[in-house]
Amino acid sequence: MRRTISFIGRMVCIGLLAIMTACSSDENGTQALTLQVKVLLPEGFTGNGNVGQKVALTKSGQEYTATTDEQGVATFEGVIPDIYDLTTSWEITPEQYMEMTGVEVQNENYTISGSLMKQTIVSSGTLQLQTIATVKQSLIISKIYYAGSKDLNNKNYGAGKYVEFYNNSDQAVNIAGLYFGLIESDASPAYMLGTTPDYLYLKQIFRFPTTGRTEIQPGETVLVANSAIDHTQAATQEKNLSEADFEVKQADNTNNPAIPAVDLIYTAFSNITSMNLVQSGPCSMVLFNTTENIADWERVYKEGASKGTLYVKMPIKYVMDGVECLKNTSTGVDTNKKRLYDYIDAGFINIQAITGYNGEVVYRKVEKTDNGRKILMDTNNSSNDFAVSDDINIREYK
Image (cartoon, helix red, strand yellow):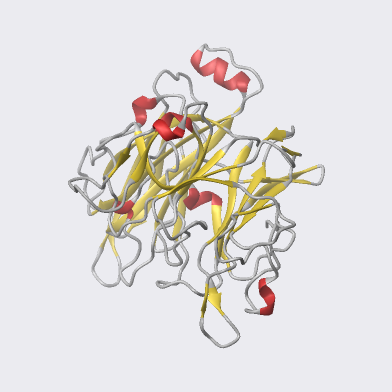
């Protein structure tokens, strides 16, 4: 969920390398399989950093884990044929980075991660799981409330949507002039992954102001609200956002004049100036920084179209962090509709409600606490890092 060190690992072609004899059968006659996962270090890395690392095998919310052996292979026994996601991630220090690459870096920790999504496992064999290395960012996207809820009259309520950012480091962070953008949310991606690997397509772009509160201390949260008022008066699942740090000012006068505004740099919709957080998803977003003039960036229609909605074609190299929020459906989440490459977000998160309006929030889980400061999970994989809650408070993490 941040910028990559090596772009070689963007698109990894993975397949079963060997077919082995099935090991046993369950009571229904389905053959239980043995699956081995070979974890490959990022390109340019050497050593045994892939030894003793956890690999997760998940299906329909169920997770199975195995640890890599001296050859970097994790073995899963008794696997029932089905469609699975595989992920792995771990952190390394600057010293370990130097040891594995020969490149000296300063004051930066790294995450090594990899994923294989929607793998059809029908026979015993071996999969190769390629990993990439990314800088562990200080400022991260930590919470997105896009579902909305029901008001006191049981009608749909979407005015209380908000986003939180969190300083996950041990040093102050300056947010002045940083941007965050909402990825296009068409029923199908405007451009499928791999079509234009150097770009993302944004429907809205906002910028933090260069005056006012710009320095964020370690463990502090920045809350950006669509409407910085007390929403609990209208809907029981909503929050009091009257003390938000920033507000997206709207033309309908539902604003709080006491709360400073974020700058709206671009919106693809002439009648929408608030954050277009789609209540059911997809609702993916990125945090980025650039000195380029965004007005000079190309505006494009979705692939193959000559009219319709215009999206900003954003150079992907400026991404600092990203979170993939996908839409749940009656048949589950379609990961073929991912907008973010694995080196930005190797997984995804989603609310359970198919149509939204159930008060669910997606938020980062707490990895550990250091002298009272919560350190949130940031393994470059939202499937690992995020959870869903319908009762978590603003600025709260657990």
